[in-house]
Amino acid sequence: MPFRDIKFRTSDGVTLRGWFFTPESFIGKLPCLVMAPGYAAIIKMGISASAEYFTSKLRMSCLMYDNRGFGSSDVREGAPKREIIPHLQISDYSDAITYAQSLPEVDPNRIGVPFTSGWENFNRTYRPEQIAALSKAFQEDRLDRAAEKEPRRIAVVDEKPGSLVAMPQEDSYAGYQSFWSMGLENDITLKSVEALRSYEPGAAIHRISPTPLLMSIMDNDGVTPHDVALEAFNRAREPKQLKILHGGHFDPYIGESFESNIATQTKFLEKWLL
Image 1 (tube, rainbow, N blue to C red):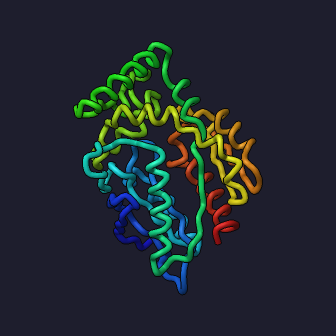
Image 2: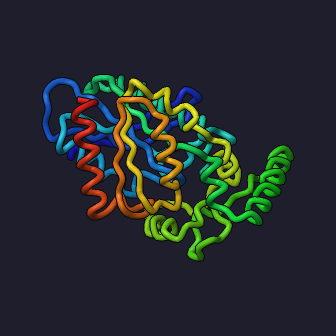
Image 3: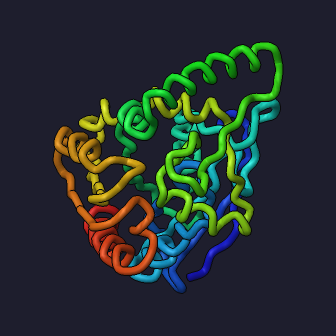
């Protein structure tokens, strides 16, 4: 599918970069789906396959971009690279939607998908002794920053399962290490982990309505546990749709799980976005 490089500035002056996909040919304006990668990821890690699929099957466009501080996107002056602060990423999504609405090919529309509970994820990810070590490190990092020292960093993944890293699950290493040759860096700031722990968007999931919600859940997801996602889905209001797939966190991006998931997503977008 045709795509072109794009860049836009956020409301606090950060330049974000990505790609804009459209069908091979079209007349008039198109609805637009705005996409960004997951935790510590970049757009080169394969999400473009979804944009290509959507724009080949449907009369719609897709705008995807690297989150601030990752991949080709910039970071605010004085701020560290590869730092994940949820409220800033939420604001960047709003800026991306505003930018998309300014494109001559786009007819304004939007769709939202939530992450559910940072607290649950954090406390299920780490052992008690690791939580104690991280809590101490969070305090030390705050003191370092106040003293204008370099922020502490933590590896995203490690070959040894259970290591004290941001994503210690065994499938996380397999999911990330193959992309290092594409510019993916294997570290983030320690504050990113602390910020994730306090991020609780699932508390407001009922407010998504009347915007339609599609939630895809893996039944063996060690990164975002499926029971936590299911609990949040149960609290969401209509219209909503649930897709449960077999496998781990990264399986929806490849093979049969990708084909099953993308087909459901395409029907959902055809019904609600078009």
